[in-house]
Figure (cartoon, rainbow, N blue to C red):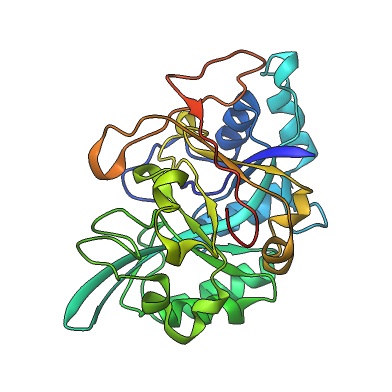
Length: 299
């Protein structure tokens, strides 16, 4: 089974995002673009988490779907070719700003949870450190290593993926406020990092030049701040859907992943626009599929 996933998005509760970033619009655009699994984004924001609990139901595999009546109403607004299932995965992006090694570090991290109890524990822990209600992507004065520890303690299938690792100012390996390696960023817990997000600033081939990244899975997502941007970057998984909510299964699986990418022309946040499969059409917006096959232990 091959499917596409876009696991870095935001809700309307994040700053500088569209008011249309609700679960219904995320579902509608994901269905239009052939995205099988989409992140909820912002799952520790109290208002958004309450909406997630109200509108989503667990599938029993670590993923969620809209309630049947909501999904059915949305399918009625879609062309027949687009009436396909869309699953959600609990996700959030956390920004950490702290001083380490005589330098101010500004790092963005993606965190995933497989159940609502884990999301609740994560939100409770982060809420004791800073204000998680002011922004869907909260800014916390917390060391990256400590954020990873909190993530791991929130649930057995919770995991962290460093976000857009080459963005200069807000990334684990960014030139202005990051580190020289993932190990330096996450310290003694770096072994729990098994994937990194290449983001809109790099493609797989660029990352393959860095030998220290050879052990990591490469993934990329849209970082959508409006629902229409879903799928401008995505990851293709020829594997079972249940690989995504489980750090253990993703780490051990031999399934490969591939990214949809195009030329990068916009500085630190160049985009890769792809409408993956807009109801059977080829709305590719100058995109191409980069040969991005990457197995669990290397290229």
